Image (cartoon, rainbow, N blue to C red):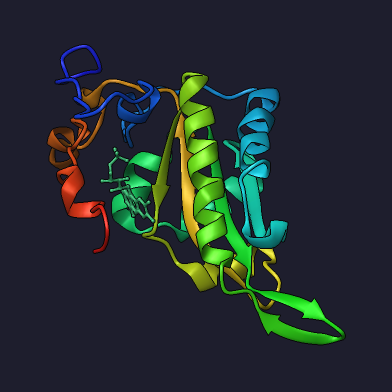
Length: 196
Ligand SMILES: Cc1cc2nc3c(=O)[nH]c(=O)nc-3n(C[C@H](O)[C@H](O)[C@H](O)COP(=O)(O)O)c2cc1C
């Protein structure tokens, strides 16, 4: 199955097509990414909203061939590394989890939420530019933090693989059925007028 034979996702209410056509593919071509494209993708993350505009999101990125790409790749769970090794770029999305106020370190409670908004912004920008952005929580957080010099008081949340969508046939057999875009719960299970 490839992009042309996948069933379309159908929205129950009108939305911009980007929300349903984006999906977390794993099959990548061998395409490389120009740094300028990657900077546009990161720029979208920069403009994500954050609590009190504190902007706690921190992103380490590497293009395939960079030493840091190998470091990030090595941190991935085996089941992710097997397909993410073909990515054109790997990103680690982290957040600074504290703010300094009058010399004191206070927890920044919305840091993870804000990093999530940044991830989604970059994923949609990547999609609009014809790139797949696939987030992964399956990685060695302490290991990647150490290898990439993430300062104390920061948390890595996801590794993001960015690549051009390839043919599902290039994937290990067990991953091919998962290349089909998945669905969602009905809207009334996640959003209700007047209460939960
Ligand atoms: C925080 C987070 C962690 C994820 N971890 C993984 C992962 O380790 N491996 C993987 O293949 N996909 C991972 N995904 C991708 C999700 O499985 C995927 O987003 C979800 O099934 C919805 O599919 P879609 O993104 O194609 O719409 C992760 C996504 C998020 C947001």
